[in-house]
Image (cartoon, rainbow, N blue to C red; front, top):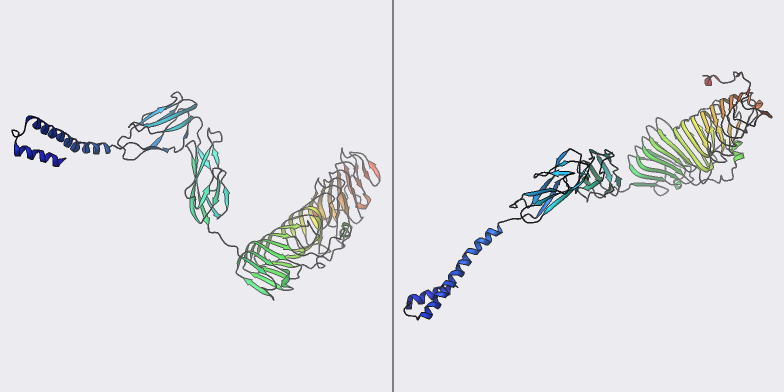
Amino acid sequence: MERIYVEIRRNIKKEGVNGMNIKDTKRQYKKIAVLTLICGICLFMPNKMVEAAKVKKVESIQRIAPSFYTRTIAKGKTAYLKVRVLPDDADNQDLKWTSSNKKVVTVSSTGKIKGIKRGNAIITAAATDGSKKKVIWKVTVGIPTTDIQVKETTLTLNAGETYEINPTVVPKNASNTTLYYHSEQEEIAAVNQKGVITAKAAGTTKIDIDAKDGRSSAEITVTVKEEEKEQNLVLNADTIKQNGIITGGVYDNIVVDSSVGNIKIILLNTTVSDTLTLQGGGLYQVELMNCQVNQVIIEQERQNTSSVTTAQIGSGISNSYPSAAIAPSFITKSGTKVEQLLLRGNGEVHCLENSKINGIKVDASEEVILAKLENMSGTMEIQGEKTAMLDLISCQLENVTVNGSVKLHDEVTEIGSSNIKKLTLSGEKGYWTIDTAANSIVIESDSLNGYAEFSRSVDTITNNGSNTSLSFVNGSGNTNAIRLLQLAGYGGMIRGDKSVSVGMIQVQNSGTIIERENLNNPQIIIGTYANNTIVDGELKYPGSIINDSIRNIIPSYFQV
């Protein structure tokens, strides 16, 4: 274009206007005018386009406080809704604030809202630069949350573990108690909207908990440990061939197989975080010194004891057990601590020299269990359809519960060495032979058609079972005295031999038969609802008192 313009000027200059006819001259001037106009436009428009390009409009409006769509405010209270206009250098960042219901919520030109009365309103913040960008909130006038309470503010989890937060929203009657959960680093620990955290990989992250009414929040710091591989140790005929000491190890599980034979294994300064298992039917011995063990299980091949009958158990056939069984021995010494001992098979357990076994469980679900326990304390739980036959030596047990049949025998014949503070017996057709002293024995109400035999002194016996009979005998030449016998269950027979001293019998229910003469003539009080009570073959009426003067036949250690 510039070349044409220059050429025309050259022609005019060369030939002059007079050298051309009028028509040519007009045509040349028209060209000049058109070219001049085009050149002017080309020079002017780029500047205008640059000017237009400099105007930046709003691309989006983001909520900052609260960041959720919903917000709750109390009546008469005020709060600010805060936003961020993007891009940050937009030319016109002015917003227009409006309320869909000014009778419920009002809003100022700066985003300040005020609750007028209970209800809901939509608050809108809209761009004024023509971009049509906006953001809205649903504002509720009601009861806002004031706090989110969590049980743990810091957690340590293993990879793959889960944890449910279960937070508490305060107050409970808040208008909106919905919570939002968010993990800052989901590759370390993720959280779903039910509040369940799943540990994924080693590291530390934060879990944010926000009330969706925009008023409350909480935070939990989660540390995920690297996944640790189990450290297990198996001792068998291939790994240990003679008496040996294992020292200073940290293991998840240790298993001792019966194939080790008749040897002694000592664990010294060893930690077992899960289970130490004694298997098989071997006569080996495992001794722990200054060890920390979560659980010990004696689980072995048992001899055939299924043919032992309850009658044989009651007659004391197994006073020599557990020597008749092929069973391992477990000994704790010198500061060893075991959280729980589980007997699933025959065995001997000796708790010596400042060591501690916190809890004992005996599982006779499949076979009769024969075991010897020495110096035990704490609690013991016995259960199963078969019978547990336990020989006690110097055991001082706080609480023993039995659901099934059991024989408890104090190995110290004359004076006895063991005592149980509270012994609870239960189970249908239970057969209980109690040859150990106790402070209190309770037969539960779910006991039906059971039989209990007592051959050591007991302070109080309460029988809540139905048709459950009690027998009192003097075994092994020891003293057998019962201070108080309470009969609260229906039916059953009470009998014994003349060497047994029973201080008082209280009959509280019907159908009981008592052989008083064979109980050294105790005082008997028959309750007002105790019908059909028979004493020494005679029917006694409710409210009767037999032998109203209590004889001094109770040992001094039972006197009040």
